[in-house]
Amino acid sequence: MSRPAIDFLTFRMDVVNDQAKQMASAIYEEACDVSLRELRVLRLAHRRPGITQGEVSSEARLEKTLVSKLVTALARRELLVRQIGTEDARWVQLHLTAKGREIVKECDRLGRKMEKSLLSVLSSEEVEVFEACLAKLAVQVESGFDVLPRKKPR
Image 1 (spheres, rainbow, N blue to C red):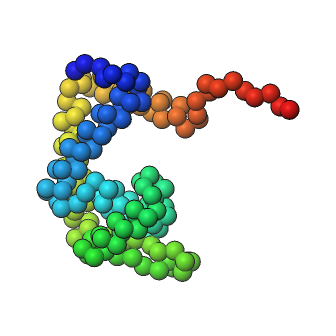
Image 2 (cartoon, helix red, strand yellow):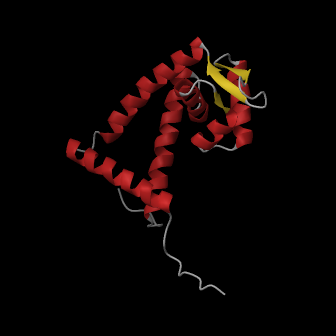
């Protein structure tokens, strides 16, 4: 594969990520009738029963209005239910239905197969190095880039 015209690491990672997400979304939609974004909501509600829509928005990195639309659509399909918060009535908590849990289970199985296929071009040693490098990059991004000169106090 040739390098793209825009030769920045973040762009190349974005291209690979976008292609992988498009392929995964098509598989999830065909197999389980859920989009990748809907699956993010379902997975978070599965792993954290009672999670709020705001928490889903933050953790899934989706806009609040989009999460609201996704939750409404998933509730209509009876994949999750919304409940008024037990500690604070201003919060709506999300819980999966049995049907929603089954979809998450099947999508997780498919996701592991896709991940295994994606990583199959790497040796086990390369996978370990890749995982370590990804963790280091994540820490670096969280701490920010130090590229601009510091402004002198006035």
